[in-house]
Length: 225
Image (cartoon, rainbow, N blue to C red; front, side, top):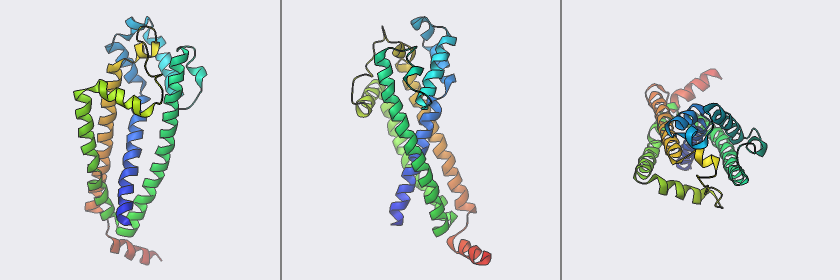
């Protein structure tokens, strides 16, 4: 039973960190502006950086769930808005999952810290999270070898329609967000995921060295009583 709970702990922590990394990078307006400048979006769209920034603000608020289609209608056509509706649904689901996995992670960490001691809990964090590094390496290889195929596969998995197939000649969204934008943000998400995992693993090392064993915790509890 404890082994299953340990596996569940690693999964819940990993999912929480992954979704948080996706959100933090997707909501980063500075990255959008930098991408616009690097990919010549001003020239392609005929819009100024200020105008593009306003569109980004509305899009980010939309993805955060702070508004409905009226945030996007002034800028995008019906097909683009319909696609973004699907994207918003994914973000809504991801937020719900993040809250569930975050609470579950806290409960499971507390359970192991109390039942086995913080030393063993730290050990589980440090060694258990290494499984993610294998995934990161595989993802990095796939993205490097053929990002276009990966990105197409991603859309086929998460979308049940073809609204994501936009026309770069007529659709502002794909003009603003060409493939280099997405390849760049995926790299940033993977990097953020790796850094946050590593920080948590370092915390695991700390508790492995400085934490208390089960008998020490039980002794302290008896003393407090």
